[in-house]
Amino acid sequence: MTWTTADIPNLSGRVALVTGANGGLGLETARAIAGAGGHVVMGARNQVKAAEAHDDILGSHPNASLEITELDLGSLQSVEDSATKTLRDHSTIDILVNNAGVMAMPEGRTADGFETQFGINHLGHWALTARLLPALLTAPRGRVVTVSSTAHHFGRIVDPANPHLLGTYDPWRAYGNSKLANFHFALGLQRQFEGAGVKTESLVAHPGLTNSDLQANTARQGGTSSAEFWRNLAEKRGMTPPRGALSQIRAATDPKAKGGQMYAPRYIQSGPPVRRPILRRIGLADAIDNLWEISERETGLEIRLN
Image 1 (cartoon, rainbow, N blue to C red):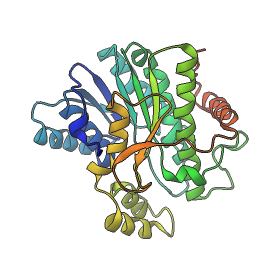
Image 2 (cartoon, rainbow, N blue to C red):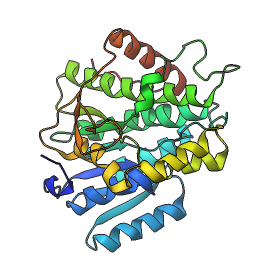
Image 3 (cartoon, one colour):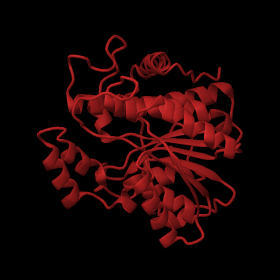
Image 4 (cartoon, helix red, strand yellow):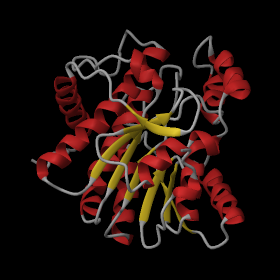
């Protein structure tokens, strides 16, 4: 059976926050949730693109309930400001989709001095999740979906002594490490929820090969010598954003989905969204503990429920 947006239940009365909602997978995730009746908080750094995305969704769903929050995941201050505003306006958040990210970028630093990919892809989402936890925990069945990638398979556990790859930076290594961190974060968060006996759940998803702006942005920024290859491959072979987003949409909305599960394309890089097995279990607990220690140290924010 193929799962589509037609299978999303009625989400009226539910509040969702989607990061990177100004384009690509984030835009399609926001569109699907809003189309099912949910209120979507569109997190985005670029406010011009966010406004365009807002109007785009209204073009397909005129009655959509939407708002925009300025959110730069490369700045802990921006994350705090966005979360504070969101919590002021919404005492309950039913769905958080940690979607935004960058891929194989030239070496750089965030506003807080973090390596760009680890800082945006993981630490920014760690900080956002930590600050939104009170509202997620009050939801009848809160759900956090963190978007990883098949690249997590070539990632390595973050080195506590050098999490930002000073002197050893490689664009693909940094990307793989950040996506493995996303994977470990989702599973570690579920471990926290289960240990505390709360109803909130954490799942992981990956979109396979999708022709979003991710590869094109890498090419524009001159991230790697293979950037043009991946951009061309995504254009010729990748799924469209509406299809590629289905895995994270299903993880976020399917009532049958459960915490600790992963949703991804059936054929790894393409196909309908299905539940996929959790691999790399050897040393998983230690890897999660390591990530927790680094993330708390770097951001100054704890995620500990038990």
